[in-house]
Image (cartoon, rainbow, N blue to C red; front, side, top):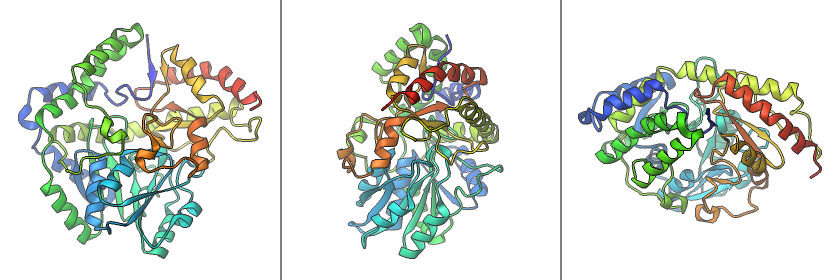
Length: 426
């Protein structure tokens, strides 16, 4: 029975599974090898900046903040509706996280809220291109220049290609990438920092050189991830795949995306290099970047057309639109967001039909929902737009493992639920 999902090995395709299986029997390639330098070169050429590689995106951010030498009482502005690993890295660098609200129509930083949050202690702004929707980096650049602040672009959800949008990765003093298992490309883990400034690049180089190695047993577990999900997913609807993954979890064969300590606001302060084996996985997907982005564009276009033709896009009983207005047909969205009352109930109903739309970005301003916002320095009521949006959001999968047939099935099942929820008085 086919499973429609966001997070069950979305990029663990046949190529990645085959490569991971091969690497399992080549442990001499796990920590060191040529793949890391080849990936560095590809990234540097693509972005026109120097690239530095770390074990994951959060460690890349920590290395960047250390290299920027921000004062210990320095403040870094991030948006409400972010992943807990971002404020964790800020705190680990000795800085303070300041949350600014988002625009409902972009799910990205509200520039007016950013200006209002700036104080004499503010040192940097991190803008997130949420789900691949471009943030207003032109205005953010102007704000940062006006106040002598560092602008960091978080491109964890999207890697731009030659079809645009051209603004992503162009205005920041530094760019962050993640090669996590559900990002634009996957190495199962990994992260990169890119910058053009020579002095900053020298400091980042030193941070990478001082970084330790990921333990070999951890790398083995990372390589098992695409294989275990590849075996489990065809049998998940029958319960066999679910049991297999549960057993793998008990045997600690899988590395958690976010650790228990991280969910409580604590991040290890040590840096590690990107394992060569994970760089090799990411390289294989880098070669498919255009193809994967085009697949995401195809599904983005399809969902957008459905939302318009089936009148999901019309204002609901409260006058709110279901669609963030910034969504365009040519965006390679990591997922397609909609707003609807009762989103949680709709996800629960679809789960009974083997459709799993809980991606960790629902019902919480600091994700995943198992995080206590206070542990991440977030106080309820700080960002009301983000709080409302995360409760009402319902995202549809666009990853390469989602076929057009699955997308059609999903919208057909969702249609009556969506219309009923939007026509009901609040």
